[in-house]
Image (cartoon, rainbow, N blue to C red):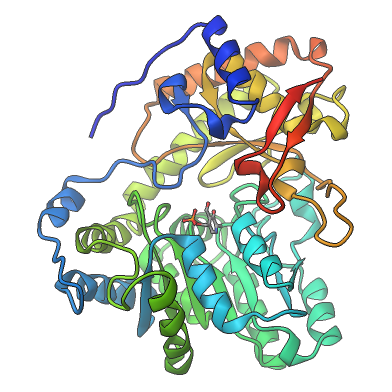
Length: 446
Ligand SMILES: Cc1ncc(COP(=O)(O)O)c(C=O)c1O
């Protein structure tokens, strides 16, 4: 499917972003020329997926589309049990309703914001055990999504088994820059988890991209297919939550998949309450059909190579211009290091948000802040949490833009970089939600 995009003038964008209270989520899509807000649900489906849509079975219970998806999940990921949900956070909501209680701790690698939100909403705590290398954007390290085993064991040995419902491994790790987790690390986490008898759950939005990096960067995997690598990855998991809007290459959908029949039965109760019956869970039959095909396409090397090479193309252009980005380049996005880009803007004025707004004003390119606004306030002290990294994420929708668009984005960011010394003031918050504030926050220019 091809969609038209619309160019605008700087004057128009100044007016629109002011009306949007300097929150890029508030812009209308036709006020954006190139939309890199997210790679979530924004990709183009294939001919095979559209064909599958036409044969969707919309029966309330036991549809053939449900069984198509069940088979795809079994064949590609290896799980016997699954529940469809309307998207990734819904899978988290259902699974955590069954597993997470007040006072628990959930260790993992830089939990995604909705994951953390669902943990904290239940008055539990997400503990970040990502390796320190992930927080130095200049360091060339192949698996910056890895979990630090010492940090993890410190958590596992401090709390009781009853207080640790699961360990979450996010593949790839979105928050630390779309960075992969190595197979060796996945395996070691599983071994540690077995020692303490704690289940391992993969937050799986970009699991196929993770497998691609294992194939390219980890010894012993060059000759394995992506599907073989994916199977091995999941042999070390007890279950998974999935946002199908990423590596399912569909516009909406998610699921939970588990080894445990007992746990899936517990989740079914919440699925029926929050999502829908257990054989559709918030998804239309046609969407489940498209997802079954999408999972298969996303785990083909040719598709992954084309996608990730486009991200690399953009990243290399930016590096050529001297623009500081998270290195090595991640799977689904470029993460611009805003602290190094705009050293004059104080952290209290939201450095990454300032840069994201500047890029929009410059050329109508919409990225997203991955910094203090996203990090929310500490649930107890209500103080801003200042993360180590202030990033602007430029996420590339799958199968959507051409490399010509990448050249445009790079040139736009270079123009901002050339005038960076003149950008001194950021923003103040005038209105915010108590949790997950970045979606609806309202700002004023300083
Ligand atoms: C790693 C990760 N987990 C979970 C989610 C939540 O998924 P959804 O947006 O489908 O609710 C996302 C979405 O961006 C994600 O990147």
